[in-house]
Amino acid sequence: MPPEENGEFVARMEDLIDLYQRPSNPKVPVICMDEQPLQLIKEVRLPLSMAPNRPVRYDYEYQRNGTANAFLFTEPLNGWRRVSIRERKTRRDWATEIRTLLVEDYPEAERVILVCDNLNIHTQGALYEAFPPEEAAALRKRLEIHPTPKHGSWLNIAEIELSAFTRQCLNRRTGDLETLRVETKHWETDRNVRQKEVEWQFTTAEARVKLKRLYPQIKMK
Image 1 (cartoon, rainbow, N blue to C red):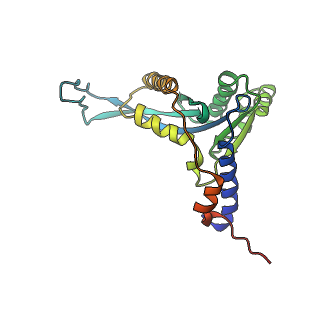
Image 2 (cartoon, rainbow, N blue to C red):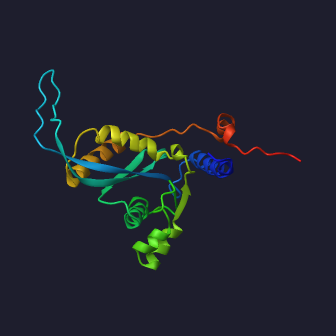
């Protein structure tokens, strides 16, 4: 990382660490979001069913059947997550997901703090491109975005949840959007019922020791 970027990195890092140390507040929840492109893979031949001492067997041949994108939102302190499967990942898609987050998932929240990366679709301007100005403004006023620093995606807790989703739900071939959406909903419901939470333990004090090399060196006159 170029030295001139270090100051920006540590500022955003400490900002996120401070957010994760806040107690749960239903009026101002901290939500993390991440995305993942997906490849739809269709079977050419039916798999051989499971039998005693023999797992399901799949043919090596398959057919690519398009792509999709997963939008994942999670509130780490309360063990809640939602995964939405969409055909594309555009500014309008993201804006629509944000509207769902604010209006349907957290209608009683005064403000939602959103942790996400610096992708160019993650802007409040996308709301104005998707909705009338009055509606976009109402959504904007309830949305507070805290971006992860460049090269610092590990600071987004949604990456942990997305990794679990990939291992547990995307570990087999899925050939069409509808099937993917059904299987995703099953995974989401099960994980929410089991209230799988993420306990963030990395503190600012630890960061200043373990990541000392990233902090700009101040030369005193």
